[in-house]
Image (cartoon, rainbow, N blue to C red; front, side, top):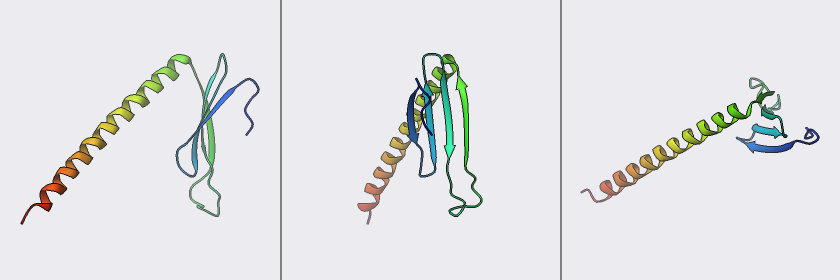
Amino acid sequence: MATPKGFRAQQFPVNTTDNVHVYSDETHIWLQLRRDVPTEQDVGRSSFKVAICLTPGTAHKLGLELINIADRNKEKQKAKAAAGSKAGKGKAGSP
């Protein structure tokens, strides 16, 4: 899909079939979610495209929420990896 005239476009791949696209200009912020799955690849998983126009306030709140979730999950993963690392070292020294 072509970028609408006067809009800035950013694409964020999620996996091999899913993408988040952000289109913006001076007065609009569009968030578009896309899934492109060929029928021959998976007949049960449908392709789609959906878009919503966000107000600046909603876009800001959404961005902050995503940052907070990402930070929290990153810390949990670090703690889990550290705990696994310590457990592995303790087992290696056991008789």
